[in-house]
Image 1 (cartoon, rainbow, N blue to C red):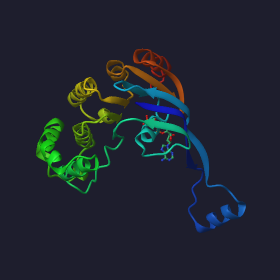
Image 2 (cartoon, rainbow, N blue to C red; image 1 turned 180 degrees about the horizontal axis):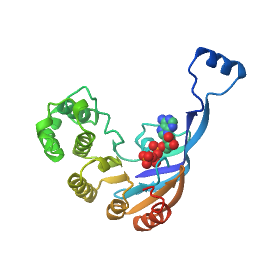
Image 3 (cartoon, rainbow, N blue to C red; image 1 turned 180 degrees about the vertical axis):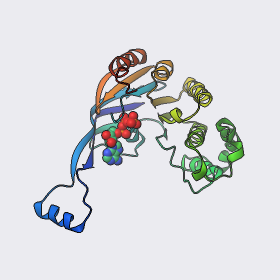
Length: 246
Ligand SMILES: Nc1ncnc2c1ncn2[C@@H]1O[C@H](COP(=O)(O)OP(=O)(O)OP(=O)(O)O)[C@@H](O)[C@H]1O
């Protein structure tokens, strides 16, 4: 269960670049501020029920990833409250916090242990992780040499192996090829049938309509609509498909 109540998040955006010490001093004397405050999320409220697949849609920069990071506890809101019941497994933009200097297998071990598995349990799951990711040949390759698709495959396969109670998925499927995407979608449905609650951020109307029970549309950090996934996809398509911002 996830309860997000009136969550707002602001970032500071730099307003001008200064290249020299002289420019810095002049700006200091003039008392100029370096940044403007910018609200990435404003008063966001919604619930995700236990066992639900909940989709988050919205144009680029609307605050989707920021929201997922707040639910994952990677970022803190400036105001509002987030309540999460259950173990959260996030698969965020750039994988799951892997270390590029370690090999794929070493990363799987580190991640598994961080997620609370015993070393023996990771060892047992390791073959299945690499089989699902179809990366058996690359076990001993350093992650820095992985393509973004390979990285996403490993992130997804590793995250699902921890038997998550709540899975947060941020666009990770978009970088996988079509076969892998299909396989992940089947896996998401299977996990959900076994009780996993899933929140998925996606630009794909087909995917949201296919797998989500309900969805939410964000725009400029504000909730525009929450409802049945097919209705939300309809609103999203109507609003954004003509200007190509999907
Ligand atoms: N660490 C940060 N510092 C400053 N601004 C940030 C930071 N993270 C995000 N932002 C800004 O917050 C806004 C929302 O970003 P976010 O990544 O949440 O959007 P998004 O909906 O996930 O976009 P996309 O569809 O492009 O992935 C953007 O304008 C972005 O530039």
